[in-house]
Length: 127
Image (cartoon, rainbow, N blue to C red):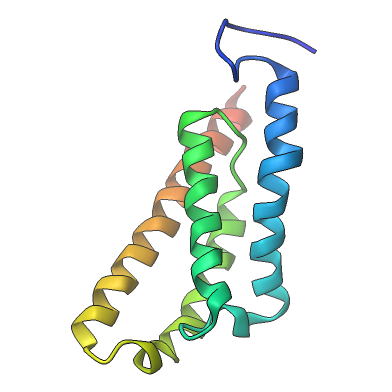
């Protein structure tokens, strides 16, 4: 195991911990949705948890140097989530404008993680 700096996350053991203890539970939350897309429906409590998991994965990749998921995984997550969410958003949001704003946040969150994932995995492939 190695270290490449003085920071708390600049060593293999720290990033192994982040992967095992932090990222894996987040991936599990998202996997639940892939196994049962109903969890992404707007009126499901897990819908919000899934989006929090996606946001935290993005933050970890941006600020802690955690390995993001592969871009194709993020694309699958986004498609699965939006397919379920779009069909049920009117059950939660009485005003269409509110549903549209929430959808924009959801899309932006997935797109941000996808962008991070693309940069990370393209850099990894070129080395």
